[in-house]
Length: 214
Image (tube, rainbow, N blue to C red; front, side, top):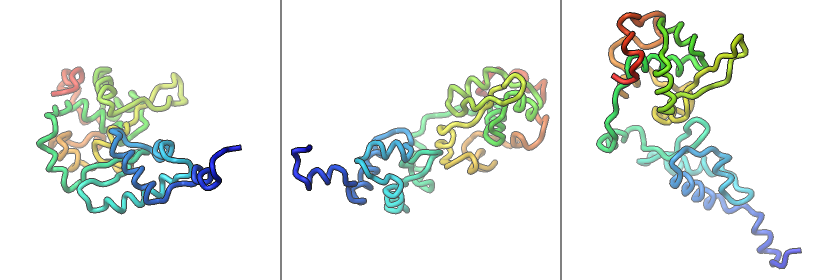
């Protein structure tokens, strides 16, 4: 038996008040760089805490503020309010545009996932170099999905939470349209990938297949 008084013993198994749970969730999200799932958050909190309800309260408290609590894939994180994103531009590192081959491959994976390499090539109309896929994997914008239950069991590719986070998406269902991709500097005035089969020129695309960046 515990030597602690009954009121203290009982308090050890009681969840903190919701206002305190909300503060805990706020602290966890503020201190972690990567989005945290409800389970990850709850595992850090006292026994009996309800991370889901605390997140609801926290999101309401930050609604309309300069930073907001947003859902990214299966996780939650603090992010700058979309309408204030322009204030952060001077802090962004200079980025290089993906080559046409990289853009098309990434877009096909995003809009057709899970998709195999052969399916990507069928949509593009030309072969996909291993270097293009390796670079997208290195950038952590795509990852390997489940193998297809077909002869050879080819691997599939899907986009990552890093990709969703970059575009401020909750899931792949909320993928940006052509205008958003152009605003992000990932598309020029060429036809959007996947909109027309075989749109890439095999001869003109030969060199770009080996180089991920222009």
